[in-house]
Length: 69
Image 1 (cartoon, rainbow, N blue to C red):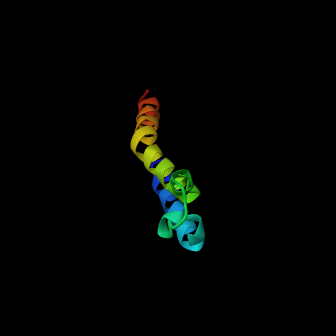
Image 2: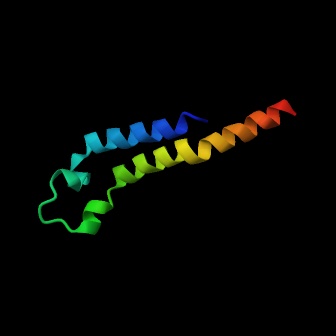
Image 3: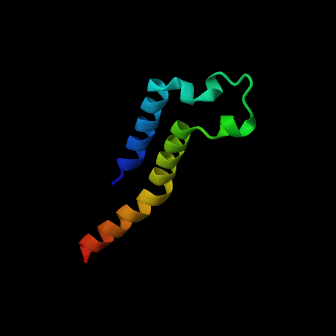
């Protein structure tokens, strides 16, 4: 369960490397704020970090508590 977040981060990084044209932060000339802000690989990385740091610890704690009873 704890590996899902880091796995999503790795997938986002690989996606950004394989399709660098999707990350317009690398070449921001002529791009507006929202075009620069909405980058799918960056969303995948952010979701992986959020899941690993916020959601996964609670889920793992609940699963371990259920195993004890």
